[in-house]
Length: 66
Image: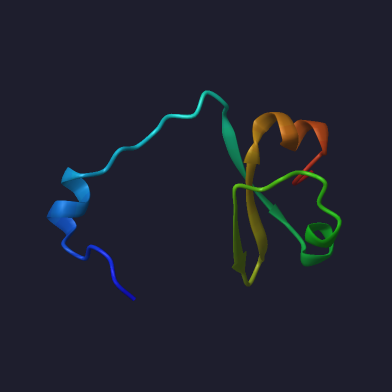
């Protein structure tokens, strides 16, 4: 695998983008993940459950993490 590994170069060349939408982190069960209607930006599988990153609007609309 190739790619930049120098932290100073990585930080100096970052071009972050601020999204207009607010995102939230919600913990759900693996069973809830199987039926998730929202489109997650990211997923983290942990012992306690699955953390999904979704827009706040989608979290409210699909009742994610409630």
